[in-house]
Image (cartoon, rainbow, N blue to C red):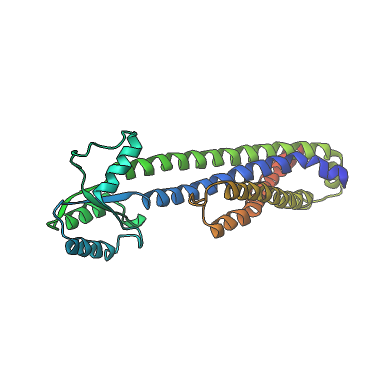
Length: 281
């Protein structure tokens, strides 16, 4: 039994490595969507108020913004122009302005929008609606930032998918040739079975079952590795940076043993058939 297991060790290791990268790639693709959502919902829309805006009108505008379905609850912030000037002074380390200096800034309301509404069309509608208010001097946001975020995350996702597919192909090739070597080592046993009239299905069965077990073992190893990496990131990254939904991640882990079987069993089936076909001929 020890000899039989040792012959399949490289197959288990290669599939486990491939499954680990596939699991991380799948997590990265899903994580990319989380990053896009997180980045979108932290983009601030800035509403500049005219200098003569009365307190009552500012309160009405606040209520109108809070009542918008697109606005994230609790994200509305009021920044007086004096606070804005202090922020600029601290950012540029310019020191205190002269007493006679005029503050050129506006009082500002900032808020964040739910990710599903953070599209150029929705933002244009929000801007148009707010600019109808007579005390709104301007509505500002970066219209290109959203597109850049989505473009970069999409590129990373494509790279991850491509890497995962490549690793699956490499795993299939490794399994195929590993099984060829295993079968060659068992050629005398296979020849004896053929001499007594054993069918291909009978000869193939133990190898395929072993491949199923090896695929499960590879999946379990990959689950441990991917889970370890995920929990390490969860522990060390700041809490406000999303690392994906836990249920989705558990689903990815649960799929690794299944994928291991789907990789190992067909590759083994084809390798055994190839050997039997050529030895028979």
